Image (cartoon, rainbow, N blue to C red; front, side):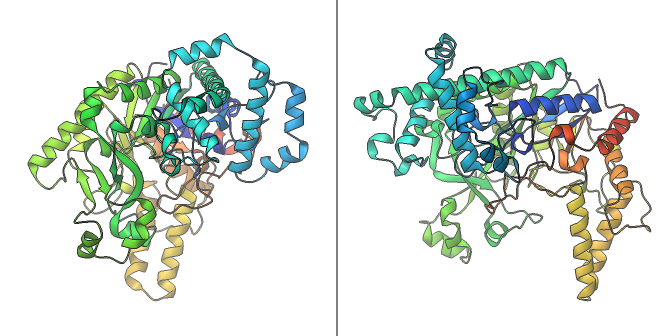
Length: 556
């Protein structure tokens, strides 16, 4: 597909894990993605945005993967129809009716799902024998050498991905004894086979999307997990002394630590000089592999390329610092406090250096991406130079209507959005529209009950601003998120000047289910699934959107 800002399009955001397919095993997979592509094409959505599809670790976060290159085995469709090396007799032996029924109900049960898919893939691997295609794939992807060894060592160490807790000889690819390498050879071949299957299925998804005129949007997180094959095997590319994150935000205060210090993600910083010395080969490989599957991709936390906020302590130590002031924190960290790298944006000179730093890195990514479109998640505490620089580079950023405000704090008119932008009512980190509306009303009613006239007035104004942006009567503010209000708000999103208008799938159906709450680690994060299979999704709301898309001319 040829994507150009000259043609405005509409799209859907849905994590793969959230999909319910016809034959899935408790989590969305490549076959379910194909079903959703067909659904998108039927209703006029020509963009399908997914979260990162790299292999996740124990926290199951797509943004904390154990490899920046390996694809998640849970996304593999593991039925005999989708996996030719898997015999029906083995599938029926491993997947009993009871297991299948239990996993298909409710949220994702990662421990059971991961083990089940591992068992099915192992059975397929045992039957596949020495496939020449796998050998060819392994030769073409040298990153597999470190990845398969790291993955086999996780098994050897009881499933723990924390390589710093492993025996000393396991903590580097160069120190693993020859006798152990021999012992792990079959497991390494298995993990290479799994990656060959995963990449083959995702390349097939790309072809399927092409045939249905639906562009796939991928996602590349700015950082990588400390406990990843990338850090374990390329220690010289990463600075482990600092822990990357984001500064405090007035609008985002989910817990006491985040409100005071910011978000501590635990990601190592990049040693950019070493990346530069190696001609950014690691980054180029990451981008090029993503570009083979996706038509465009979103860089999560693009602000980190310009300057990244980092902590001198790991996330596990956050609780120690909640009650400390800056002076006490300095004593606890030998004089170090959370800070920006390369520089804070405290002077024009530092801003200029940071802007130049980010621009050079993004130009490198664009060159590696070729014809694949690069877009930027530019939300949060955004320096004033970032968005003009993204525009100069031709990289669209994001517009969330209730975050875009003018001088009197009204929502900015969508007609004034830059064409080189992406409008979305919410991302996977936010509550859907229906939940946002309910929370506004809840805050307003609580304030009234407490006779807190100031906050009652402020929350009422916010309800009216929402109504006004949707083109409604500010004197008629419904208590519920009505179908009429839902349609009016979404119409304004589609009518805006932004190139792409993307809706979380929950916002299509005015549902309140949430995919992630940033900051605190909640068991519910990354587990929410659609309440129905794609084939059984209600047709009324998508039909309304199909009409709105046609009326607002968002189609090829």
